[in-house]
Structures are given as C-alpha cells and as structure tokens.
Image 1 (cartoon, rainbow, N blue to C red):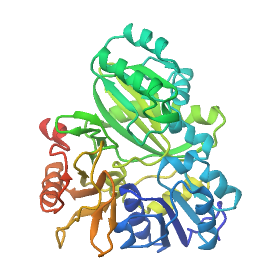
Image 2: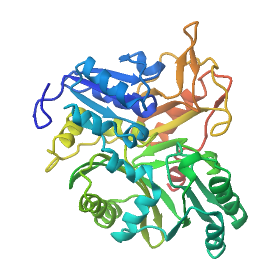
Image 3: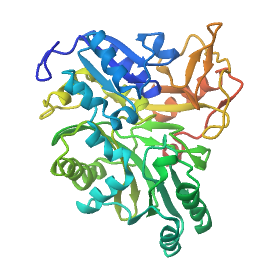
Length: 433
C-alpha cells in the first residue's frame, strides 16, 4: 500500500455510496491512466455493471473499514455526508487507510447548519442574517419580526429536505412547529435556524481542499425545486449544468477573494484539518455573492456535470489532496457544456413507488451518459426503480442547447411507469441568450 505521502497513485480504490454522484466518481476513477481496481459499497445496479459492489451500507462505519482491510484497499473516496458525519474518515485514518473526505470534525460543516452559520458570522464571510432556536415560541417571535419570504432550516442532516423557503409568515410558522414540536426530522430538527431569504440566482462552487490549499472545480447551477419554473418543494436536486455562465471570470475572482479563500482559512483557523470537497452553495444577490450553505462532500447532481468536465486525472487530483500536494496544481477543464436531467419517481420528494421496471434506450448517442442513482435489479434481473431520484441523464456538447437537446431526447425514450423529470433544466441560462 502506498503511504499517504507517496507520489505513486493507489492501485485499488473503494468508493462509498449508492447514488449518481458515486457512479460518476467510479467512472472517473476507472478512466485514470493508473488503471486502478475500483470497488463500491453499497453501489447500485448501474455501478454493479462496471465494478464489483459489496453489500455494506454507507452508514456501516465498522463494516466499511473491515471491507477496506479485507479487500486491501489503498484509497477510499467517500461520497455521501452521513458516513463522514459518523466518523468514517477518522476510523480509516486510524486503520492506516488513506481517505478522501473530511473527518467528523470537518463534516460538522454539513451535519450542523448552526455550526456553519456561526463560522460564517464569526469570520465575516457574506451570508444572510439568522438566529437559532430549540423552542417554538422564541422562533415564532423572531420570524414574525422578519420579512417574508424567510427560510427555516433543520440544524442536522435531513437528506436534503430539511430546508423550507417559506413564502409567507404562516408557512414559516408551520415549518417551525413541524420541526420543533412535530418532530418532522427527528433529532435533525430539534434545533433550527431561521434566516433571511436571499434573493437572486444560485450557483454551486465545489472546491477540493487540503488544509489551506484548494482547487476550484468548474462552476455549475443546480435546480432544487421539484417542478418546472422552480415550483414545488425542495429536493436533493432535479438537474444541473456546467459551466454556469452567470459566474463570469470577474465574479468568480470575487467569489474566490470574498468567500472561497476566507472559508478555507476559517476552517483551518478553527482547528479543522480539512481534506475533501467543500461544496459552497452561493446566492448571487444584488449586493454580491453570499453563502447559503456548506456541504462536506461532492454535490449530487453537481458531480454529474462537474467531474466529466475535468480534463485531467481525477484520481491524481483526489490523491494529491489527500497527501497534501495540492499547492501549485493547475486544473485542466474540457470546453464542452454539460447538462444533467434527473429522472425521478413520480411523487418524489414525498411518497413514491419502488420496483417499477426501467427500460433504457440503446445504443446511447455519443456524448450521453446515464448515471444510475436509485436503481436495483429485481428477482427476474430487470432494472427497476429503488429510490426517489433514479437516473441522471448527462450530456456533453459544444453548446448548452446541444447538451439540453441531447439529454432530453434520451429522457423521453426512457421507459418507466413512474418516470418524472423537470423539462426546464438550463432554461434560465438558455433564455439569457
């Protein structure tokens, strides 16, 4: 096994997770010139068609460490936030296994929205005014004194569903009661954050971080709400595209100066030896960029458009970050536009069916990749739905319009009784032209 400080790339990699993000990472790692052996846990039906998957749940920290030992894994790349918050990176490091992903200390940036907001306010990084509550009465008094719309957030991890952008005070009051009194998100909602609603366009900035060194990945713009025109409830993400042209080179330089570098330094100054992806959700307001949230891992579905636009070796990039060799690294990006449409099960993010048979068009056109998320195989070996977000149909083209046409052309040909997808991914950027 190479040491974490070795220049030699690892020969065997374990990817932890089961979604479209992990399928994308598996594909990227397999494409490395180092030709590593890649395995995944627990994976999904699409990933299982490319690498060996092991039935170890992403939140089974002890099981994952044992799997890495048994399979003589030389490097672990952690996809989702839950195992990071549970200390998977800590356990792997203690076992002498290099890992890309922050320790539990760093994962608090996502596991606790209150923890993150306090860091932002302490270090004067642009963000919305907010207050924190564990009781209904004070929370209601506060939000009634603030203008609507207003945002109510469960403090802990809630699978991307713990944020309510309330358009009215009454809607905000309902969200507060559901979280604090109704236990809607369990322990994750036992404390809440109430913050002013930032107005503008969102963008996602993914940053590979190693201590105080960092590399900014290609920009992207996610579509969080379930319905066309940004209607309906928030989801984990219904589609995205890259690059986000609203982030001009000048604006990106401002974001780096005012948000990225101060964030990386703040994390280090507060004693976190952070190694992994720092996802910064940013609202581009009339007065400038402002932080909405931090996540402690690659975004999903942002990964499905950002990683395919990296021209260099993704394994080399993540390995450099893990062993402290990011300084001076120059990221090479592909010029194409990428667009991902999430094909979901009807009813997501609420109640949705599982087990519906999926048929994919074949052959797929050039430039088109279908990343699996919530998929499995039934007893007959058929591909079936196994989650709310089922597939990420991702296209690369010389233009965003070309990518959108390519992706939507395939979405229309996917057979599935509960198939649902937004039909306006990328529309805001396309309509600006």
